[in-house]
Image (cartoon, rainbow, N blue to C red; front, top):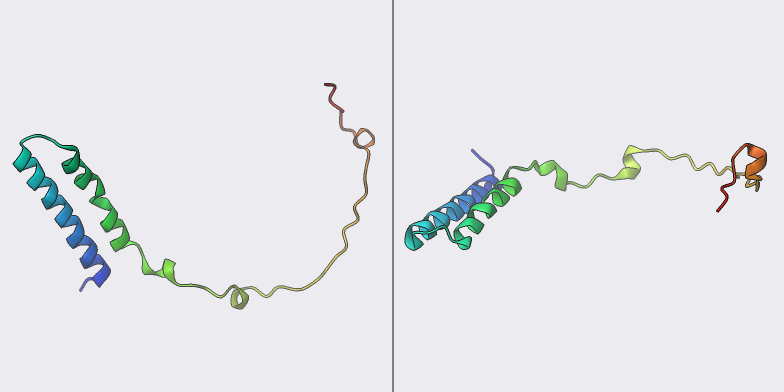
Length: 90
């Protein structure tokens, strides 16, 4: 048995295909409306067959144990010329 999301997505895609075929037969030309139905057909299938696990939320605090260590970082203003970098001339 398929999940209800897959069934609903498949039904909507089939409806879009049938609407496109109907517009092709009624107008006897390829209209933009018929092509737009065909272009929209994969969207319900994408939503129907994506895994459901992406919508679940994970508690990050349970997964990672963060150690609260605060280390002071010395911020020395070093001259770039003394470090070996070239200074561009503009």
